[in-house]
Length: 140
Image (cartoon, rainbow, N blue to C red; front, side, top):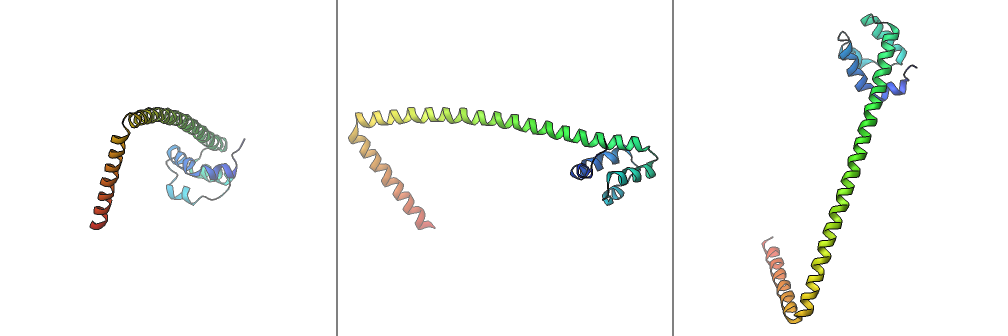
């Protein structure tokens, strides 16, 4: 089955590079100027290289199909690694949530055991943070 114009356009850069690799007598500028149908391209390559119609058509079909296959492989790999990254992110989130919950319980327990000292520390931290904020605004 012959490649379609749409297939050729969508994979043109890859196909152009493969054509040039296979038939060195095709110049980059000649290939860059092409803007026709697959039949016109096959005819032009046939005239320039002496290759048979079937040979060029088979080469184009292979170049297009291999390109789609590689794109599908890349898409599959991206999907796999995206899934793995998602799993890792969920595991990290769960781990951090556990640590945060544990720390929160420890702070709550300390506040219950020593409420006056906890309040004094909170006030001290608030005053220090306010002083730092005031100093940073004065320097600006």
